[in-house]
Amino acid sequence: MRASVSFEELYNQYFAKVYRFFMKKTGDDQASKDLSQEVFIKVYNNWEKVSNAKNTSAYLFKVSSNLLIDHLQKSAKEARLYDEISEVIRAEANTLQKPEEVDQKLIEKVEAIFNALPEKRQTIFRLRKLQNLSTKEVSEELGISARTVENQLYRTINLLREKSSA
Image (cartoon, rainbow, N blue to C red; front, side, top):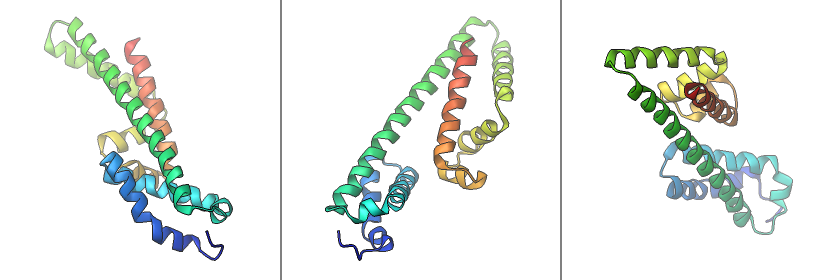
């Protein structure tokens, strides 16, 4: 790559291509935007290495591929956790006799688990899962990184799984 190419020029030239790559693989507009932005954050943070790369396109798509793999692994892990939580709730519901007992007991258990969470995790969970905000929207609203939102959400799900099976 020529040393005279600026970050802005690189961004303008490749952002749409990187975004399309993620859209083809995820089918999720918001995730594709978030991942594309993350690629260019990494590029910006490693600008010296990028600006000296012989094949900028290959470098960008290597970073993109690595981020995609991470994203897909996290998504699969989160889906498995939701399935496990659902299974625990179904199993518990089957042990009770009356529907109103099922509802009340589940509500009490979920409330107790949720109220035991740190306030930050409660807020992240509410915004992301109950209000259906994207990871990026939650991170912007709370002034934290998208990675922090994902990590806190993952920890919350793990805690819910542990506590609900106990």
